[in-house]
Length: 257
Image (tube, rainbow, N blue to C red):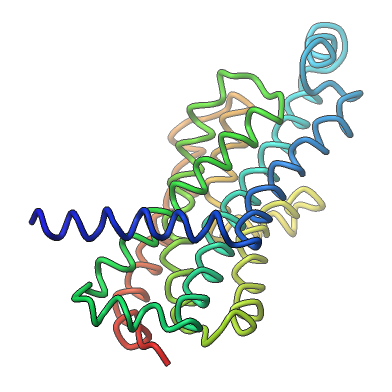
């Protein structure tokens, strides 16, 4: 048991260092935070953040301020999950396969389970860290912080499992760039739900659709069991589907070409 924990700890350190050294990983961190900052100031005149938000809340339209808050937090949440939980993981695994790192680890008596567990934990930690930075930069009310981080962490689980499969299926980083596009689009799909009710009716079933809908209910102060059961089922279903796909495919895909 101690030997297993030591191996996982060493893998966690290695994967974290590899992420810091990779320019793609830096982009995965900077882009969601940058978008949160951009939308905070771009929409600031409409009432998000500091005195502007208080002015809208007290004098003009509280619903407008709530809507803006949801737009900024929804975008930053989906981007943090998409970039931190999906893109970073897919590119990271593809890089290890390209450089034959997986083969070296297996020859060093490291099991497949230890490799994917360490990678998944690092991706989860990176995603939560990016979510924290996005929330701080968004200027949203701190009363939403706990819900935001909780929903972000839960929504990341299915995306990490799917990304592990996609990353292991990628032969190199070029292939990873191609494979990561549909995953990223699925994760970002709820962002486009505000364009029309028809689009929202479809994207609510995306991997992040459930947590995005729950975030909207929390911000609007409409979170009830009757309103939350559908997004909860959607989120749970994606976690189950992703876990089954991962269980069936990861050993077959975990080959260093």
